[in-house]
Image (cartoon, rainbow, N blue to C red; front, side):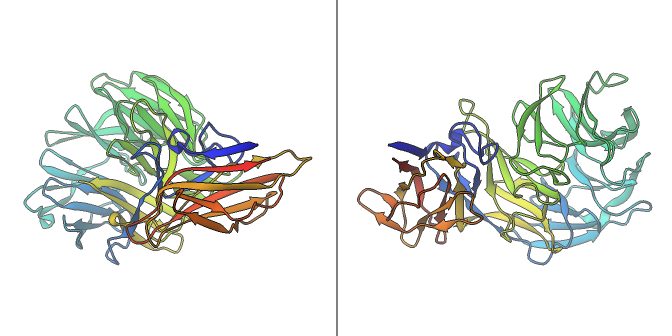
Length: 468
């Protein structure tokens, strides 16, 4: 008898494809928590829309502030919203710079002020208790190159740095310098990171140029000290990791590890990336949640992979770093969406999104509700083609609260859709098993679904399927 066993998914995460992946990996996995208790498969909490109808633009920066509020910025309409610690949203003001577009690209709190970047102008407002946005200055400083798309910000060595096309501007103790360092045209600064006391510049040319560079600058020399070229359409985002640098680059789902001088291939999001299918991570669509790096994947064209909030990490340094689609936005959609920013406000995860229908909003991770139907799909199981076999099997659980369920589906011989198998719950053995063997097949995929009720959900230990 041959056995196919599913367990310890925190050691494998998402496979590279439906056919191949590292041990303990699966072809798809949505809504499961695989890390908080190694060896147990739990259902994640759900993202629920918190902002109501207040937010009417894609937010690309969520800024928790020392005044106790969180500020959110419209990326095209220039609106500035406040979220209180109680989760109440309100519109404060709308930016009105003297030149350039009003969309706010990035923002940071730095030495008593909030700075926010627009195409032509850098605005600022003094942080108060609460912050009085009527006293803001939308024209506090003027950018030289007025990049319409990217003005990323980061603080290194107590200096605030801001990208402006081929210039890196800075604010140092309230003094603005339009060019702290410049880089080679036509490179544009799209994202910023840091390594030790140096700043990292992630660059971009345009959507047609499959070549970009990462630059390392010590913040005091006349020019950057190290550069590395890679054949990608831009460096989109520096993931919020601890003591190592991962970047999302290009539009084909690739992540690279920066070793201090070069970018090395690291991981790729599984999907169909052929032809004109593209996705990417926005510069502020990454956060570290209790030690776990998260990122929000946005569709760019033709939905090459499921979109939502992924993790790329492990329980601690002794575990492999694996991919998992942790959270789906509140609409339930995993295609046609854009995630502009994600951020932790205390222990609350916030996610800013826009969908294909033009709806926008801010979701929060709801501690009172579980995700409705978490699921995983096995890789394609090839059985001897000249001797089709019937499969039987079960899912072993630790807990199955009243009103929740575990379902088993199968897909034989590359069928288009899954079929639900008839199951029986054995409470003595804590298993949900197939009542009858699945049809004889040459290839088969198994789908396991954990259905929650309010804040209760099944906890799965393993699944096993056997064929003679």
